[in-house]
Image 1 (cartoon, helix red, strand yellow):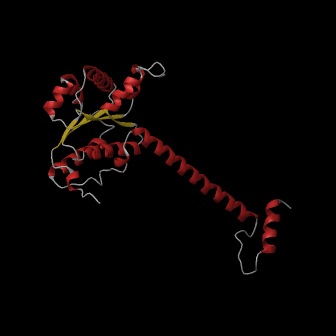
Image 2: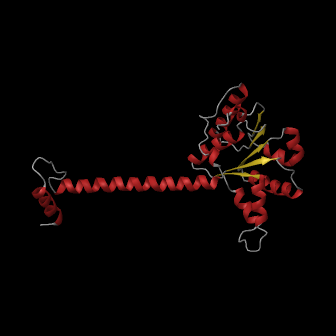
Length: 245
């Protein structure tokens, strides 16, 4: 008598008569084990997928404030907001079809980061690698490569950044860019454009000031393909938020 049959008979001998056992025979037990194994495998796969997604989101640079941003929870109260939302949706739909950059320009608190993060979240769910990084943090990472103990180099870091499916550079114009920063930005944009890798920029500056800051060559690269420039010139969302005491 094998262990399965012995176990079933043992269970039958000790359970009360009014209780119906899960397994009446060896076949029932085998099927139950198979089902439990299948459910366990699915649970492990779900956990692994969740852990992988957490790692991807962490590496994406999307801040906690914007981690749940999507197109569906972007609030619309004027035609301009409807326009930028529709353009952002169109951008991700056509992401794989056409090479295109984007620039979101306008006042603080008007939803630039929300839509940029919504674009990033959408593309991550569709298997793309994205990175949102401030210009200050980008330059800090570049300068850290000068440390002799750093295994990376400026060239290797720029090469790595240039291979990401979508790079979004935030806070351009918050501080005056040095000539070195302009050179680095130009190298990144130039290499990404040559590889047909899309880049996004977020800035509080208007077209003229951003043009003056970055220079004509960088702006021209940002206009390649089916690129878009969206203006966010309405009242800040933050002015509507009531501070809770």
